[in-house]
Length: 636
Picture 1: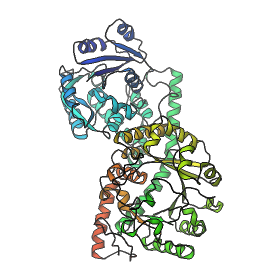
Picture 2: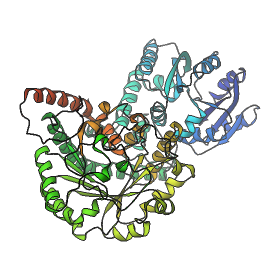
Picture 3: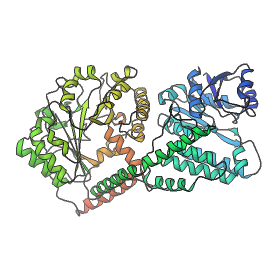
Picture 4: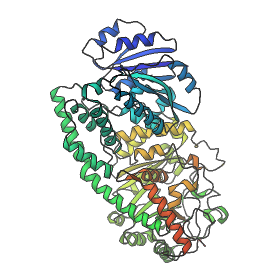
């Protein structure tokens, strides 16, 4: 094991000599890398006179400096050390023992303060160590360490002025286990002593609450800098309270274009203040409007669950499709189980289809309707009658198509209609799989509409570096595209195709999506949803999508189980965007306290009891399909 120690510094002339001398006396460190952010107190000059230390110069910013050090490191284990943090003498032994377990992605050390007085510092250190063990979280002064492969897959630290360490550890936990080494690093209490222990502790937790409620790292950094003279302004408390109740996802901007926060000239300081104000104003009313719609939808969905119904109805509107796409789950031989292949199922047309769909909607009373196929546009005449009717009922309707024919112009004015175009990558790869629904035809058929484009990430798409970025850039530049969605390939049991993602492929895909999401505004995937791809539900019983969605096939009488994929999907490798999105919603805390998943579970449990009592439930149609203990309503 080769261990690289990376130390970011900025005007740390007093701390660096003692720390480096202690590190150079060990025999387990492969290399020491010090990344200077533009020190003006002689730190860089002192370092340049020392042997055995690799010096890197970078723009100021802890995340930027840590990433710069990691890029030049040659070790297979990276230890990120603050200039005023001292490793214990036995750190090497503990690191090697801890990383000997393959399930460990990285970890941190417990802490103690260098200063022994006042005694209250010991209580603060004990609180930090307790928080680390209980919540499995860590901050940068705890000497975070990580396997190099994991660091690269995660894309390194976000280049934020604050909480880049907390964010990195949060993402690392989704890859593997976070280990806490009980041996303690020694940290400095200089800020606690300079500004007051309780004041510093309260400030830190104030900022942490702000961070977890979605307030921008750059906004929090301004409050932190101002705290050197006084506490954050009153507006900060108002924004924090709004964040606690609405949890706005403020944009976390990083990289070139943002001026330096710490030690910036007055002109840059004014620019930062201006950009922060714009940022706060930007997510205010807009987020409030979107959250009010989300709350309304959540209440309606929760009411449906409480009444024993599933809030989402997914309908395979037809068995017909002119395409023969490899790997299409809808036409897999086991998709409908004993009901037989989809192409052999009876298919409704004309008035029978229109009345059949409206009857399902009337009986199940969903909040959201998803129309899939086959190819839905094969039934464009029936849909031209159905869609306005569903829109008039106030339902949110999603229609997923390959755009094999022009989309009717009358659909442009329908409220609550979300058109989703499914593609298989860029034009060469897509056209090989989906002819005659080629890129040229798609672009012609969607002209004049506002749509969402969706792509499923397979192993082949990840083989070419930069492929997803090229794909995202192409569709982001199309005026008709309002959102871009990505799913990961979900295999069926026994799938040995070249499209199936290996565990490291999933990590790579998630890391790439996280990077792209920060760059392209049209990628409509919350970070929590992206990260949920690394922790999919282990079974249909744990999948919110499977538990809240009733999937019906083309005869409007056969139920698809356990979810829209049908057959026997490998749930532990699920890449369904709907499932990931619902997991993210489930983790959302109403009023910053109660998870939506807890409300759903309670409603589901109560709804099940009411169903067994035979009360409050509308009469349900008889659908063919296997009975499952997880179903809320009774199926014939």
